[in-house]
Image (cartoon, rainbow, N blue to C red; front, side):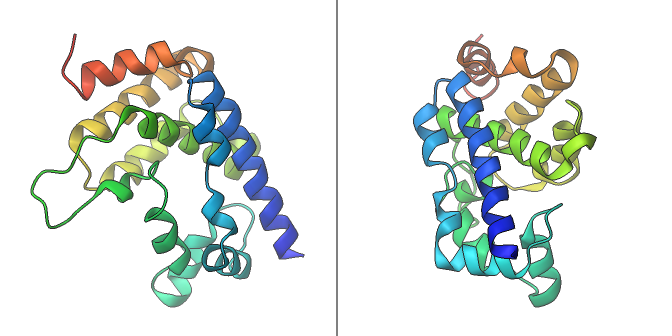
Length: 178
């Protein structure tokens, strides 16, 4: 039963990311989003630790001290900030626009799926500031996500989920263009 519930949850998440990605002009990435979740490494651990209201990665870490699914996932999906971190380098790369857009879509979708009726447009910002901005990626990438989530809280989803808005923010924050 946990298998079907987990797959249904992943599919709801993927569908929402796809819809958001279409609005941002990156529909192809939304279509391919999180396909690695169906790989044996990610699927078996995720089903074993399925909770329904939060990521199974948290439960796996509590039980084993690490999550093989997460290690696999972050190494194959460029929309995760962790994908772009190389601890051996002093300067981390600026994540390309399309992957930061997918990251935004992913974080909003995951918040909506896991929080359900508790979701509000300020929640992605609160969660990002609590956990997400601790990833040691290039600081301008964290600043971009934070700024977009500030505007999400102020103006709503329709305002931020479009390529023109996101590209202007990216150019200003990540590339230093005015």
